[in-house]
Amino acid sequence: MRQKGLGKGLNALLSEEAVINQQNEGIRFVDINEIEPNYDQPRKKFDQEELNELMLSIQEHGILQPLIVREKGNKFEIVAGERRYRAARLAKVREIPILVKDFDDKQVLEVALIENIQRSDLNSMELACAYSLLMERFDYTQEEVATRVGKSRSEVTNIMRLLKLTPDLQQKLRDEELSYGQARALLPIKDIQLQKEAAEYIIAHELTVRETEKYVQSVIAKAEKSEEQAAKEARKRMQAVLEEALGNQVFIKEVQEGLQKSLGTKVSITQGKRKGKIEIEFYSNDELERIISKIK
Image (tube, rainbow, N blue to C red; front, side, top):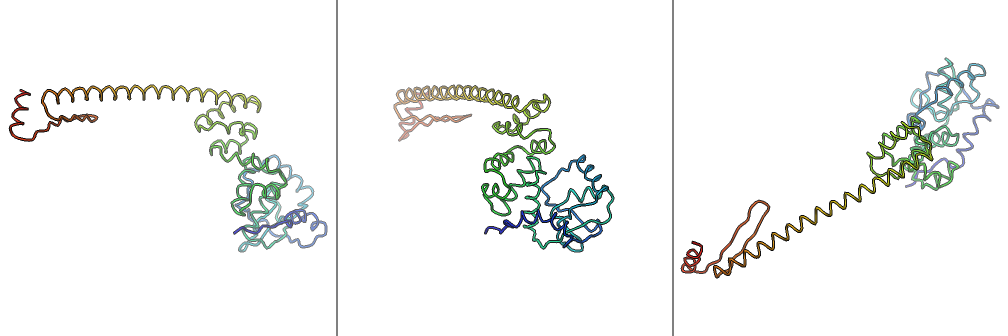
């Protein structure tokens, strides 16, 4: 069953912070140590320079927007505003303004995801994981995700294709060793080892996106040529094996027919991988003695 989301109320909620701040309604100040991060937060990397800039702003002007939180035990869990929370800790702020909302776990996740997505706070890999979580937790289609986050269907589809990269390359994308354009260009390389080697080459040589695309095309062409050559050699080996097997069959048949003619009875020869056997039929003791005399 589809989990009901926050609907249009989400945009109102995220814009509500500034309005409430101006009216000073619904806000309470609590000790910063009573606040804890949301571990489902889609944003995993916080730019230190940006945090430092926000810290300086907080030191000069204070926190202009409250954090959206929910009660969790005897503490408050951040739903939206973790960057402000981190900067406030750097600024050694003791009390922080909060706006408490009654959200369940799924609503917390949706707000956290969409807040970051709409505010362009996530890198491309974090976006891909965020879209995937929205689809998994709320049973959204890619088109529904696109509608909710204000993106086109093609943008969502292209971003989510990054999840096909190996975990190692996904991490390089998170760490910004690879750009979104470079990572997308690597996707047509299906061989994991080749993809990894190509990424290392791109990073080491600081290729542009256009240069990366050309390089990937050459890697794919070379791989296809190698595969074609390997297939050709495999066909040759198979043909040789078949010819050898056929030659053995012809030889065995000729020997079998020669023995039958010589002994005047039915002879059967079978050959395995390491050994074989010859069966000579006889129907009386006299016939056995005759066959033995011919063999001698």
